[in-house]
Image 1 (cartoon, one colour):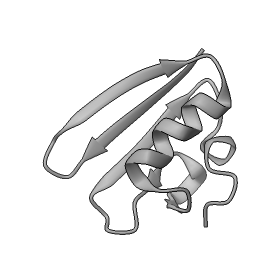
Image 2 (image 1 turned 180 degrees about the vertical axis):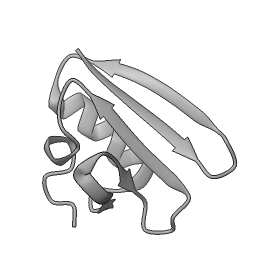
Image 3 (image 1 turned 135 degrees about the vertical axis):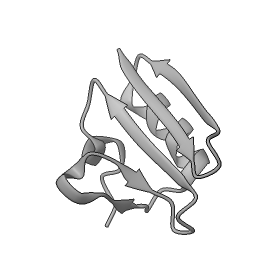
Amino acid sequence: MIAVRYETTDNFNCEHTFNTIAEAQAWAWHWIGRYPTIGRMHGYAVSDDGIGKITVTGISITELFPDGC
């Protein structure tokens, strides 16, 4: 089970669970894009505009965003 959480700077947040990496990636990429900035220590990914943040459990953030910078 993969749990992906999306949060914004104005306190909107939601979390969904997925059975496959492909499903989790599609959802996460929808919210913050395919090429986010990977946060310090690889614990999160941030959208280019800085408004949205993704965290994940069940896989690593670099598995969710393999092409992230």
